[in-house]
Image (cartoon, each protein chain N blue to C red):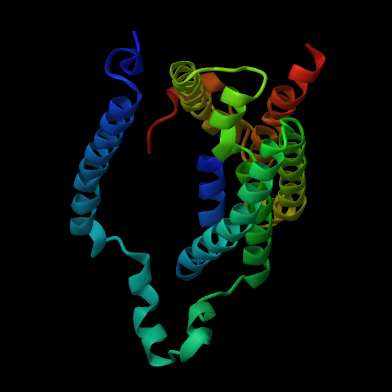
Length: 97
Length: 161
């Protein structure tokens, strides 16, 4: 759900020449950890534990989001500035360009 | 009436795979059309000559273009946590739904996944509106945190009811 905004922010705060490296590193490191997590999750489910994997999922999601928010909020304010608040009606009548 | 009821489990998987392959080939059409615009809109071109002049050798070349290492480290760390969160159970949702407390069959799981994807598609369309009204990082954090009650609900509600 957050991925369109995530991608857009990512592109804005990184230079063109480092975006591919960043994406590659994210996928490489993420895939490595995913491999371990799938193994752990499958063992838990095999043992009949259908609750702990969801608690781990919620916990890691929260940690990831809090780190992201703490680090990048300041960056967005300092580099990109706060957005001008617009209402939905204003967005609807705004010119495309 | 679901396909799996009328043609059987194995054929349903087979035709679903064929359909996926067909759609993948269709996705090549816009990808190939992008090539014609590559030369006029390719940001890599602006540093190509500079990069080739002082090109470091070996593994250092991998990271030679990085000018914001700290940002990239944080992107990678947060992405790694999110990957673990996703991978601990999401690829195994079908197992949870079939062997957990729900005891859903293949058809029911397919319908649940379809509804979930449809809901995600609709909700994702609202995220630009959020971004227009607040900082993008705030919008990202809110949309990510909004999923957590649902995750906890899937895990904990069977214990309560």
